[in-house]
Image 1: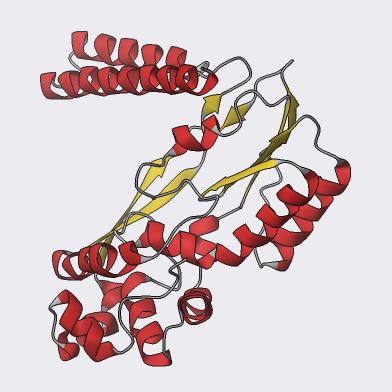
Image 2 (image 1 turned 180 degrees about the vertical axis):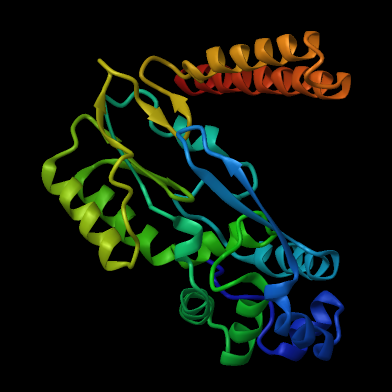
Length: 292
């Protein structure tokens, strides 16, 4: 398993991505001021913070993602930000199991502080202090991992390697299926013993993460079994979410008829609904493929 970067020094990093060393350090020194920020409403209430790097920093981050972090072997239980994996493949792993146990890591991206990134780069990837320091400055913003930047999915996986190993080891010990998708942790099997639940929570807390008190739980097939937005209680579907999508489209239609939104926004709403239907159909197809 390759858990080492294709470079050992800052000089090798600069050569690999084609950016002079001085420019890398200069960009890193002002990275905190090189983002635009915005909020988007969460389906469950509240807002989610996003950050997008300015062009100069973004260009470097894209190269880091493509030429550096993509070379790492992400053969882990994670389905997040990895080629050919998604929230759909994450949920699919649990189809057919009688009981699921889910929980959510609270404020996941804000909890990934620069010191956590620095330590993970050194311990998990074998980076030198200089390389780990430079990379940490280039991928973090305002003392946290920005959600929306090109390498953030890579870093989110790297910093949780040890957490993933511990949670996977527990799953194997009890004969359970385990996956993780960013901040979504899922176990499934014929039964989820209380001892497993308590141990999972203990591991997460000792790794420095907080558990969202209002999300997750233990669910059998008599109720909805939602894993990363997909209900797998009986096959796989997006559940009641599709009904909400229709209601949203209908409201946009009424708003357009009343002159409250432009034709461009109405067309955008229709396009969004169409893409959501394509996604819902892909969920069903993958579920059928798995069961067969």
